[in-house]
Amino acid sequence: MVKYDAVVVGAGPNGLAAAITFAQAGRSVLLIEGKGTIGGGNRTAELTLPGFRHDVCAAVHPLVAGSPFLGSLPLERFGVEWVQPEVAAAHPLDDGTAVGLYRSLAETAASLGVDGPSWARLLGPSAADWDKLAPLVLGPYPVGVDLPPLLRFGLLAAMPVHLLSRLCFREERARALFAGLAAHSFLSFRQPFTSAFGMLLGILAHAVGWPFARGGAQAITDALGDYLRALGGDIVAGWQVQTLDELPPSRTTLLDVTPRHVLRLAGARLPAAYRRRLERFRYGPGVFKVDYALSEPVPWRAQLCRRAGTIHLGGTLAEIAAAAEATNSGRIPRRPYVLVAQHSLFDRNRAPAGKHTLWAYCHTPHASTTDMTNAIEAQIERFAPGFGDTVLARAVMNSAGYERYNPNYVGGDINSGVQDMRQLWTRPALRFPPYSTPVPGLYLCSSSTPPGGGVHGMCGYNAARAALKRL
Image (cartoon, rainbow, N blue to C red):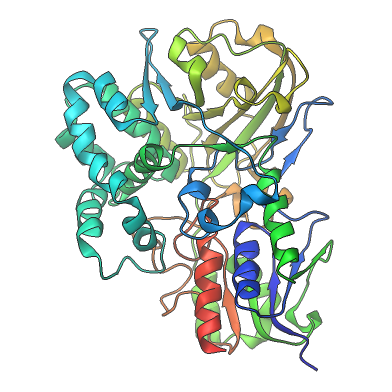
C-alpha cells in the first residue's frame, strides 16, 4: 500500500527543500535523516567549551537570502532572525589596511578608488536584476525567457579569474578582493567560469547582503523542519538507510546523497551505463576547519576587519591563486587561503558574556589528513598579531573527518563534486532534467546536481518540481 507520494532520503538543506516543495503541493512526504538531528551541513554545536556555539559547516548565508525558494519561505515566522553586518567581507593586506565588500555597491566602489567604476559596472547591473537573474543561474540549466540579465552576467562569468581581473581592475586592492570571492570555487583561477563564483558572491552582497542566523545555522534548519511539519510532512531522524528496499512504498523517491551513495543505495536497479557515469563523477579538494573559543575579539590590525562578518585571508591575487593551484594538484599550500567568520561580534548568543567565537577553514587536497592548524593560525597572526594569546580552546576537523561527519562530503569536498565547466550543469550525468535517473520515480536532489554547493535549497526544489511534473 502506497503511504507517501514522496520519500526523501537525507535531510540537509536540499532534502528539506525537496520535502517542503512536495508538502506545499499538497502531497504526502516522509523525510529520513541518518544522523540523530536534521540539517546536513547546516548545524550548530558547542564544539569547544560550554556556551560557545559554533556552526559545524555553513556559517554565512547569502544564498539563503538570495535563493528564489528558501528566500520565499516564512523562516522568520518559525524563529529565524537575520544578522546583517554592514561589511559583508573584509580582505586585509600586508600594509595594515583592508579592502571591504560592503552591503552598499556605492560604498564598495568608492573604497576601491580608480577601480571603483569598474567594480560598479561589473556587479551593479546584475545586483539590480538579481530577482530576474537568480532563477536562471540557480536553475537546472542557464536558460530562460529573460535573457539580457543572463547574457550580461554570463559573458563575464565565463572568463577565468586571471583574465577578468586583468581586464577589469588596475590595482591590487580590487584584484585581491575579487580573488577572495572567486576562491570559494575551490578551482584553479586559470579555469573558465571561475569568475562566475566571484561575481555571484559579490552580486549577492550588494543585492541581499551576507547575513547569518542569530544563534547559529541550526536556527535555519529548525525553521525548515518546523515548517515542513506544519505543512503535514513527516520527519524521521536516526534512520541510516542502507538500501532503497527498506523504504516504505511511495510514488517518488528523492536522494539527497552523492553519486557514490546512490550506487550503494540503488544497487542493481541502476542500468550499467548509468552506473558507470556515476562512478566517473569527480570530487574536488577538501577543507580543514578550526573553531575557536576566544577571550576577546580578534586583534586585527585593519580596523575595517573588526566591522566585517567574514574575513578572507590570502593577501594578493597571486598568493590566493597559488594556494588554489596547490590544492587542485594534490599539494599542501605553503600559505593557505583562509576563510574566517566572526559571528560573536554581531550576535551575543554565540558565546558567554565578554567572550567570542571564531570559525575558520582552509582548502586542502582531497581526503587530506594533514593538520593545518598552524598554517591557519599563521595566516590569522599575519594580519592580527597577538591572536594566539586570545585562544581559550580550539576544535579541529580535517577533510577525512568531514566525510565521517557527513558522508556527502566525499574526501572533505563540501560542494559534493567539482564545479568546473565539465561538471557544472552535467552533474552527476548528462540528463534532462539532470535530477532524473533511468529508474522510474527515482530522483537525485543533492549538491551533486545543479546548481551545486551552497545553502540555497535549489537542488532539492528543482528536483522536486521535476518529480511533481511526472506524478
